[in-house]
Amino acid sequence: MDALGLDELDRSFLSALIKVYKGGPAGIEAIAATMGQERGTLEDVVEPYLLQTGFLIRTRQGRAATKAAYQHLNLPYSTTPPEPDATLF
Image 1: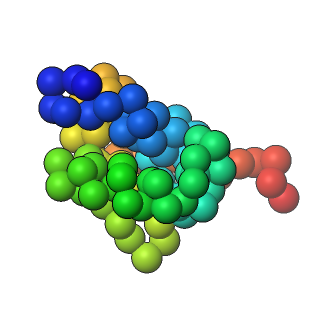
Image 2: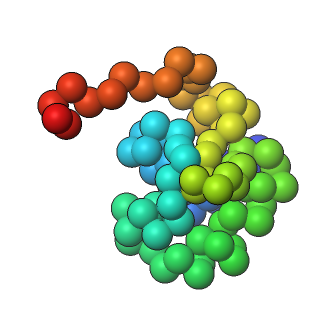
């Protein structure tokens, strides 16, 4: 556990959300698949504490990491939305 009580699973959840999904929003099924965890485990064990600490918010579009989560993991935070993938179309 770290200074704020996050264990490895908590940190992995936030890291996946930030690094893979650019901080979100991302669906819980997608995050679970990325982590190789069960959705129920994430919803019942991980999310409540991350919501309580203010590191995670739930939106209609999915879960999103807060600025505090980036700071806690020492990752750069940007309010600029990511550029669209030019190769998509």
